[in-house]
Length: 159
Image (cartoon, rainbow, N blue to C red; front, side):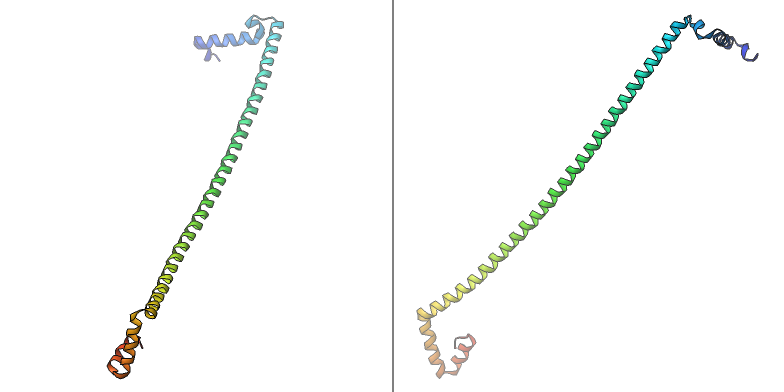
């Protein structure tokens, strides 16, 4: 202990500490016991208000945490809704593509069959009504007499 007391600053600190212990805190600060009691009451009131303040801030932080959790749930719900909308749009796109391909295929098939039928009907009408029919009939009669003409008419399916 004497080693610590060699330096002046340490000596002053040690003396103040000993005086504080010997005479009590009230005598060092120059307070009476009633003032000291009032000071301790004020300190306990401050502690109580600080405790209430801390509890209120904790409650507020809990409320903020709940709000953030609610916002997270809302974002998840919105994301689910967007996924549903995108899936619905893909379904609509597939339906539209299928309908378009079907209509184009039907139009192509219908046009081809109608053109084929109309061509056959036109040929039949020309054969029935025109000079071509008479010419074919004359050639058929002549083919009975000439075998070379008969082979030519057979090649063109006119007999």
